[in-house]
Length: 486
Image 1 (cartoon, helix red, strand yellow):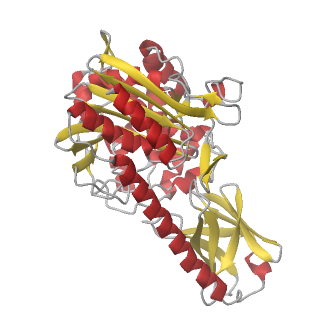
Image 2 (cartoon, one colour):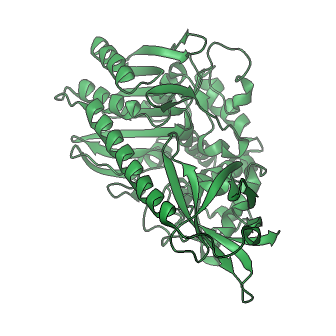
Image 3 (tube, one colour):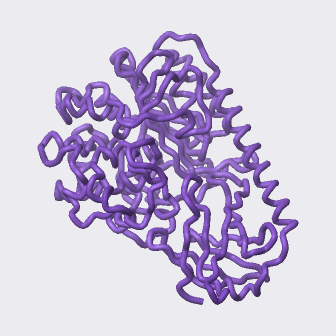
């Protein structure tokens, strides 16, 4: 298996132009590691099993496990309303304020869409303050009726861990998980190792025109309990063996069998396409558990969680009935090698016929990029044909605020409008036939493909500009930012 997988990893690294891939596999009671490529292209540093990568949303399983540890100690119950432990907590409406449970928050069934722009646009807010903006974010679905991935809910669970344990989320993980497991190269605060000259630090990259370019990284503390962990495949091998032991590792019990049933038990039904606009015949169903996805892959139970952030893509997974577990870490935005390698490991471990998962995901990426470029071209045609703004540009200038999303600012620069969102200044371009209609010219995450976000200025009874609507979420109404000053 090792030789076959090594050859596959080398091929996928080249096919996807990934700077480096690190893999751990635990099977037949033993672990082996594979490392290919450069973790730092500029310094020609090769990846190793100890190279540290951002694992992004693979963090969520650590947060859910921390909640399970506290539940075993009778400090909380998974069915407890959040407000029981955080009395000043509020959701958008009274019912969900009173009834949102810890399990709801961990299983992505709050009724809220992601609202990640609210998080990214508020670097000034701390851990707790960010989660408390939930009271300004209206639901898009009936609670508990569908799964919709929601990072701020996990940040909320981090606050609960801090409130109940008396330790910071970072310290809780160190004391209860990292140290007992011997995870010596895992960090909840990236500032502990990044920028200190360590050859174990991986550099994040984007792929522009088939060339890896150092990515602008985002390491802001409020993202903690949802996705800020950094680790190596050597450390994650210990983590995945804890999962295969259903809470036990080398004779030490971390969480109970009852909590294992909760962590790995389906909590929220998922529909095809809920996470990616792609589905496979080999996957019969997929559900969300607590910090983990569970699916039937070619008739076998497969539990996993991936992670995505600028410059990194990761996956941790295991086949519980076959005692096989693995981790895959990479340092390139949006590449799909972790998923391709994960399914390939399952095929090899289960003795199933080979599927070219690399080609499937390459085809998916090519199709996605083509669709994005086509959509951008349509918008650009509209922009080129658009009428000029119906009022002087000065009337649009000012600061606009939403209590959950924070401020956006509109200014005149080079005879056109600019809007600053999430710390980035972008063009605000007229579109359509006037009527104060614009679009924000941004970039698709991790690419050099343009993305044009609809924006519509609002006027009051005196026809003065009073706000701006921006379409920041695909399944939510446009977000209204009220004008606060010129």
